[in-house]
Image (tube, rainbow, N blue to C red; front, side, top):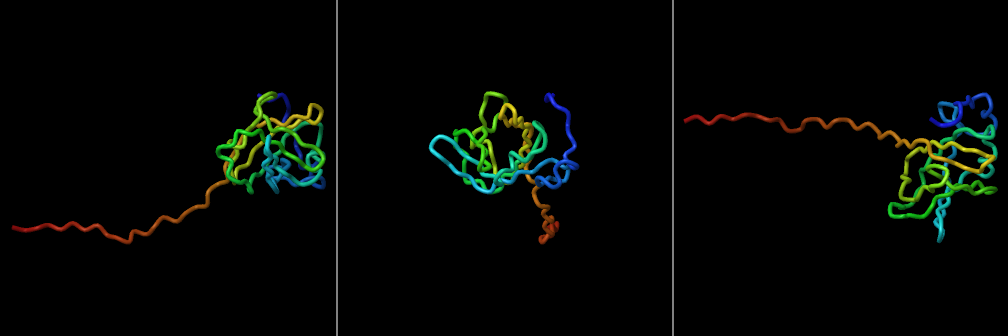
Length: 145
């Protein structure tokens, strides 16, 4: 279990940052910069500094991702003021191949230690597809002798 209590952001965050349906701050990736030594996800300017409290959780919505399926470069998030690494734990960086378009990633952040750690990832629900109507009918034919 993670070392924090689940805070209620609805009362703190409504004028500061965008939230998802559960009241958790939502950061949307607006641009992706692939550099020589790292991949940087750009989010709204100043948004990481506007997150409520010194630590807590936020959701990262990744929707404009280029093909990074073979990338082993570490991934960072940048709001124009600060650039922070996205981590699995306190020492292991996430890589570009671990991110996919249309996924939401839940992160725990700590402003004092300048860390952002992955908690969970969830794919965007696929649209429902209507079943195809049975256009061909199966008929049995019997041959008489």
